[in-house]
Image (cartoon, rainbow over all chains, first blue to last red; front, side, top):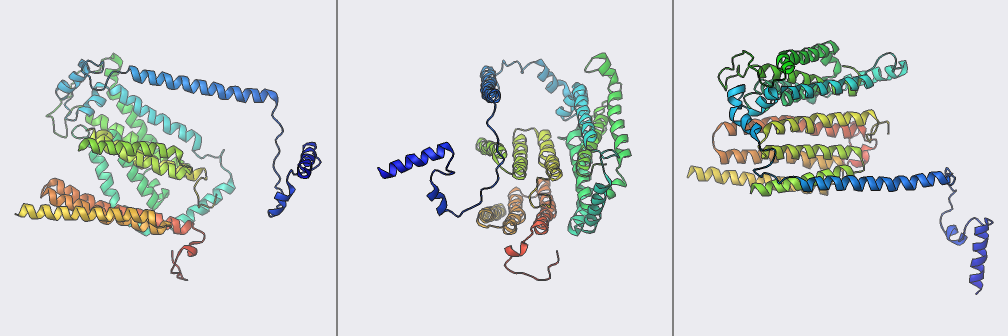
Length: 301
Length: 84
Length: 111
């Protein structure tokens, strides 16, 4: 009885704000800590509470709606591998049966993406150019977004980095980089004969350049690959791709006789324009990969 | 036999995909994403599309991982560097 | 008879590579520090892969494919120890209290 009245009295004091704590004996047993200053947030205005609640409800409804639409679409999809699917039509048969004869490429995939659907691949290369352009707009250093202190710190760090290059990495880079470059060039040039082509070979070339840059520093790469080389290679490759296929793009016909002899299938100089287009795509991809790395890490190429 | 192998790889793919967004540290998420790309390239090779396998191995597991690491370094999110 | 012998050697090599892989995975979970874990992971990458690929080469016999497999081992032995070395170097350079983790402390450390 006594305890209960005591409790109600304390509760009353606590509610009225005269006592700090409801159970002071519990807090005294702990190590007394000064209460940390907490940034107090006042109670939210009524409008904000309404907005937050309705926002969560609307988000839930939108998510459930999207998920049910997607699940319904998946439910309505035709079964995988059924003979009367819309994907199984004469286009696939034409590509598989006449691909070697019309494009001259032993690798049917290269014949498809660089001859029948060359406009697609031009779009993909342009997407890469667009990506590297926007990254350079954001991250490239010029006199407007650098200050002298920052430049001094970065130059200091670069000097320290140059003195602490790892000798094991450098030695292995000297041994491995020619092999990587050779493999990349092989994949690009053999695009119409074996799996691979412009995209994979260009990525391998770019990875080799990145390995060299991380072993020896950007300044060594700059001696043979700088901004001027980057601009020249990218422009020549993309323009060359466009010019070589202009006739077919402008006329809207996906396969026109170019007059270039297709050669014997399986030889390295065969299949007409695919050989050149592969080199163009490979150059763009290699430049873009190294450009991403360089602009991200140093802010320059 | 081949089907069992593919099933194991696909289960590993699911585990990687879920682990990549459940991991708390960004570095671990990037490493898990790189292993996801590696498993994906093996699956492409098993599905008889070696073109995609080479590209996935070079771009997904190699270059994009490096770009993620550099981005983490730029935004000072790597533990152990002097910025954290 | 020779075919049987090469198959036997191949199976023995592949089994020992499986043992190396299993013990290195156990080590990765068992050890508690980065450098110890990397020790077992690097062993898995070099010794295990060498045993596995050489076992496959014995199973396959002499052909161009086995030559390519030997090239894989050569390039892996070049690339993988360098990668492990770089990771270990980054750990040693960025760990502020590296001497707390080491059992044998050398006063004149040269990193």
